[in-house]
Amino acid sequence: MADSSVRPGLEGVLAAETRLSAIDGEAGELVIAGFPLAEFATHARFEETLFALFEDRLPTADELEAFSAELRANRTLATGTRTVVERAAEDGQSAMDALRMGIASATLARDGDEDLTDDARLAVAQVPSIVATYWRVREGQPVLEPRRELSHAGNYLYMLTGEEPSDEAVRGLETYLNTVVDHGLNASTFTARAIVSTESDVVSAVTGAVGALKGPLHGGAPGPVLDLLEETAGADDTETHLREKLEAGERLMGFGHRVYRVRDPRAAVLSSAAERFYRDGDEETAFFESARETEAAALAALEEHRPDLELSTNVEFYTAVLLHGVGIPRDLFSATFAVSRVGGWCAHCLEQREENRLIRPRSRYVGERDRSWTPLEER
Ligand code: COA
Image (cartoon, rainbow, N blue to C red):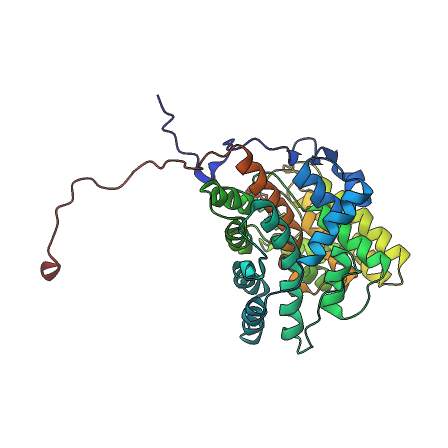
């Protein structure tokens, strides 16, 4: 007999098998495409990460070059997409809304028929160009064409700022992109899989996934983390300030996680990457030092406030520190998450279609069954 219990939020439901990422929340471990996160995130070019997710192995040098060339060839936005994104920026829409509108029109740049693999490359290549175009217009700056000699991450930074990025900034951004590219069957990834399971196309799936990612329960706390860091930088006594916030019932942004009961492994990777970035470059080391102090003070305040819970630093904390350092504006934090996660969405679309089964859960009806019809004029 079919199971008639309802699992709100589908919590605990296994809805797919995947070889893309594995999360162990108790042990604080994350594996991406078979590789433990720490080593992989620091060494892989983002193009290698994408290849590994799409093809389930690392590329040879020739394969990497061919794959990167395909991405480069797909970076330029179609005129229609550019118009939509420019309009969204002029109209004061958020970056995520502009991205949703822009990516929905990405098939305008499609060169040929609908094809899962080609569309995956197209979607991955278009997202950074859309976000950068949006930002340049919002800032009243001329929109820049992509530069073919730059890497995926390097070109994104260039299209945002108009300056050739430093190696440290590219490396820092790549570590971030590698770290958040996939994370199990989260809401946006599930959305993407549900859409392609109907045999719809990858661009539709990515558009739906952007919509899911936009929600505050999914897409991002790193903006508020930056607010917290700015607040604590101005406070005389950080720990007292944080304690007062907790006593007032506020949550400390960048701490706690639904799945990880120990330190989020992504936080550890991003913390080391941020340390390397601020140490190697001549960026604001004072900002980094102050973030470290805030983290220590927050952990002490949380431990004192809720000794019954294990509240550790989550991925958003060092995301804010690192992205701020490499020059990503606060308003683009969620959209930059999408620059990475679009790789995971597309890999899941390809995986879903390898052995497709339409995703079609059921609902339990709890409404009435014998209402009698009242004509409109009598209501
Ligand atoms: N600051 C203060 N208290 C926190 C906290 C934080 N960052 N995170 C959790 N708590 C407390 C809650 O107040 C709650 O207390 P209660 O039991 O008295 O109601 C308890 O811990 C459990 O919270 P709950 O929201 O049920 O736990 P969760 O595991 O579902 O929460 C988060 C996960 C991420 C929603 C939560 O930790 C949070 O709000 N963190 C801050 C926002 C953030 O950093 N989000 C980014 C997530 S990647």
